[in-house]
Image (cartoon, rainbow over all chains, first blue to last red; front, side, top):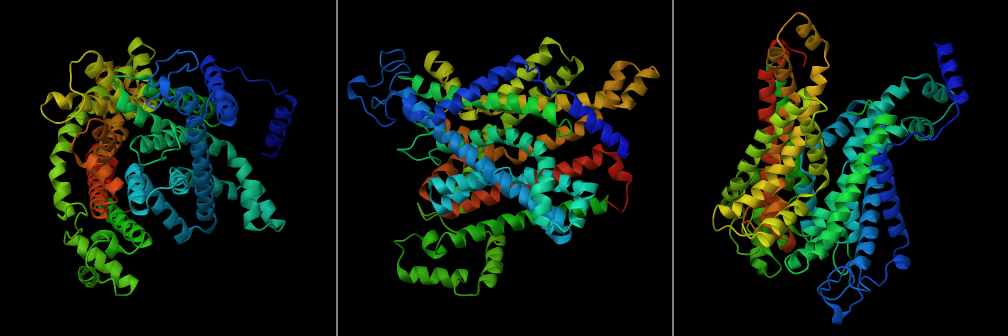
Length: 288
Length: 309
């Protein structure tokens, strides 16, 4: 058994790491995500105008108008500039929410794996509850009770999908606990947080990262849905769903206001799902 | 078998208890419930009466049990907008929501399941690829985008159908289509992968090897087994009928429960929101229970197994 393990690691070390052959769809998806990230990081530099800058002489200008390549909206605000800032806001919320939910879920999963018994039962019960209620309805009720703010919105979205990380990390931590390395660290006197976060976490990280890429598009869709309904990101701030929601009023006269952010939402979720599916096949075929 | 159902029933009750607890905690955290439900303009004696009626002067755990008692008796408060009981407001919207969601469910099941089965049986064919592309599109195109695209094409450009309202059956076509098509694509993908997994099993190969005709293998061995995961997804879809209608009803200004919820959230009409929350939880729990009972019929192992579940 030990020999097999050693020869495996040796073989892995000997084989030179090569750039994996990427399918075309994944390359395109990666390029799109890279573009989105660049737009989000350098919004101020890239956007030709501020996202609230009015140009009242050029209201509802169609795309390809010189100076406004994607046209303008009802107040003469440049659609391209608003799109660039919306991408930043939507991505920030989605990243923030994904990180929060992964942290909460993984921690709860570890707690369940460590204490077992009733702690585990409570975590599993909460996970079942979360999975069985439509998240949109829970989110809407919290927004109704507490009103709306960006912090609350990110925190709320941060609860989305935690149960998946919790289930995965619980299962993997239980099986990792039974393995030699975890026992060895424990024998050396490491406290549980050290065992879980510096030793078990890196070993199960690939599975967690795959689930993050699978949850991420759903977070984007959820945020854009809430903002579309006027219950997510509030003006004057703008997000992709928010743009679609307000662009809807001008569907007949200026469909580009709504079509540009809608296309961005679709392409971004599509790109991340393509990458997520590919990562899952590469890193972890055991995940569904 | 009995134990299995008893466990499931217990879990269903637990979910309801958790939802009520959730509503209770959120309601208490968000401020004075008397002011929240009765509105800030309510006269002090009304507020005092409300406090007394709801036992807000009692210790918190007694309030918690009283809250359960009130909900069990159907006392869900009154709408802040027009003072009518929230439960009546919600109930009169249910038919409109069902008018959209039931036909949509028929489309999902009637289109999605056969498409998924066909795609799995003809893996790699043009239809299989079309199903997969549609499934990816069904996941990545949010329903509000699909709805607006349909309005843009069929209402604005072609002028065939109205873009919103509830005056005739023609108004229902676009919302039903929006709800049905997205769900059908998702269901097709699940059915396809369930079928593919079953078709890769040893007992399918055994059945083929001993000379059972392929048609019989599919109908007698593959379909009943693939039905189990598919029923789970359909059950989830039935349970989330109301939740799924929220966005679509808003886009098409369809006066159903979903639109009521959005308006209630925007106005912070808490009694109505709480009532819809409970309604959604009840639908979800009921459909999960039905799915569990169906498992009993679909999976003979559950019927024969006694005791340890």
